Amino acid sequence: MANFHPNRWYEINVADSFLKDKNLAGGELLSLDRTGGSVFMYPGDARDAKQQWQMYPFNSTNYVLRTRGSGPFGYLAVTYLATEPTPGYTVATTKNASIADNSMFWRIGPWGDGTFWLSNEANGTAWRLEAKANQGLAMSSNITSLRPGQRFEFQQLGTVDNSSFSTLVVRNTSPSFLMIC
Image (cartoon, rainbow, N blue to C red; front, side, top):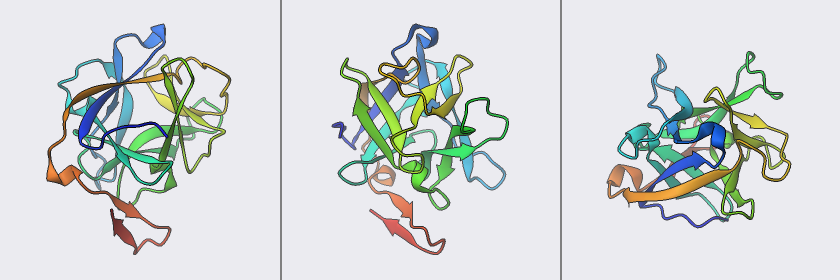
């Protein structure tokens, strides 16, 4: 498991030239019922709250990722999108913790060149998060070594120091069960 400090913000970018100077951004929960938001590659700006990621350890293998902009309950996850051209039709999103599923639990593994891949519990390790040239992100089953768009870099920013981000709320498979970690 990668080693991230939960009281630090991180900037996440892709080490491939087609997305040079762009960072992973997780938007606030903007859907009508405030349960989902967008995730995309955006021109890099370490001051942008959507680009300040917290990597919160959930267990010995998984992290929950959220941005200052998505708030303490807006977790990086994935969702089905029928119009997504990538096989699997699964795109990155932010989801409210009260409805999030196993896709909010992320494994972060090394490629061996200083960059990392991301997979989640819902899709399994045979699928990885991939940034695309159109600035969207999808889960891809093409996980060959050093795959373009899957080589993520993490740059430590400032401290979180916000009690709202000091715990996690996670939902079990039962809709009525919430756990605070």
